[in-house]
Length: 182
Image 1 (spheres, rainbow, N blue to C red):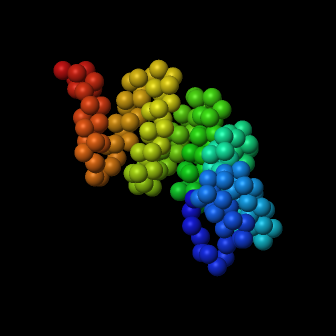
Image 2: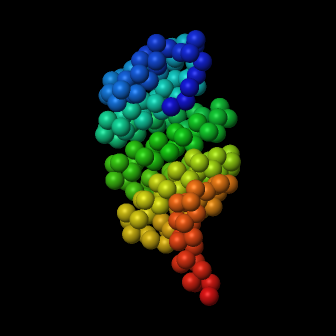
């Protein structure tokens, strides 16, 4: 969840963040819903969309993916029109996570691919890697082993500095390609 200037925060936003940190996800979702409505009433539509994304994450954590998908619907388009690419990609990734939790794996992969592309264009390697990991996990689940390997490798290759574990994993993921090239 993104931080905003505490002076301008709606009281329910603060309450939602507190509930979220306490792992009271349903209460956090309710608070973020009220904050979204409050910001919307004040004409602060970007903040309202951000609160809907926070509500979506809270609902996902509360194991309510259908409601999470309903809440986040339209926010990616809003952020795209507002020129807020990072928020757009995060909203798309939230949609993908809800779709994944609903068992809509192919739709989830498509959304994750779109989010990964935006993160990559914005030079956000950590977010790109996280998204590629989600794609890889879904491809493994659907038994698309080559796709899973490629997705994970693509995410790791985008990082400037790799941990020892990531370096080992990247070497392992390159083995199938190296074998095909011989």
